[in-house]
Length: 166
View 1: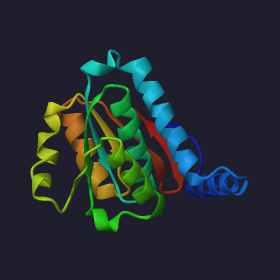
View 2 (view 1 turned 180 degrees about the vertical axis):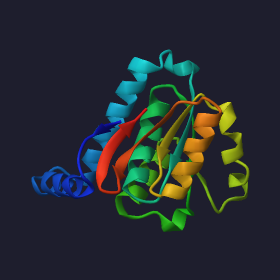
View 3 (view 1 turned 90 degrees about the horizontal axis):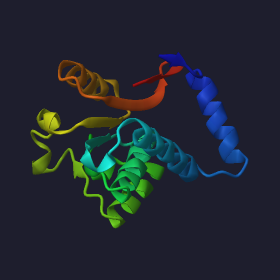
View 4 (view 1 turned 60 degrees about the vertical axis):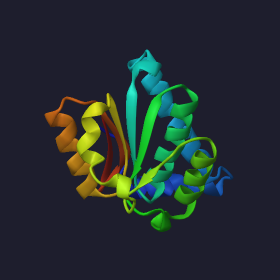
């Protein structure tokens, strides 16, 4: 793990960046592009990888929806699971979900009948992208990834410090 910024420092960095004229939607796009770049470098050939993207309802979910859209455009086989009902998606996350849907991503929301059992089917995927915003879901995904030796990628500010885990 690499300590990056405290949660307060990250909020301040985002606030200053947005105030300087770079919209939050662009920050999400840039973050997702970097994840795609990482995957291209680390997990080629990309078309052979089956990826599940688990989206939350906040900004991490927004990043994940952008990633789902870009991954689909790069030829990845993707499935997009959303850990909340569509009606609970907030702000920019909702905007990113609508854009992703318009470009061919078919998210499965937690209140849909087809959601049931989806998390138990994670074994059919080669890679897990975690864009959730809550610890309960994150811990479940972590436990599954470790027990089944699946690469698990997530990003976010945790508590009072930021870190990367891959």
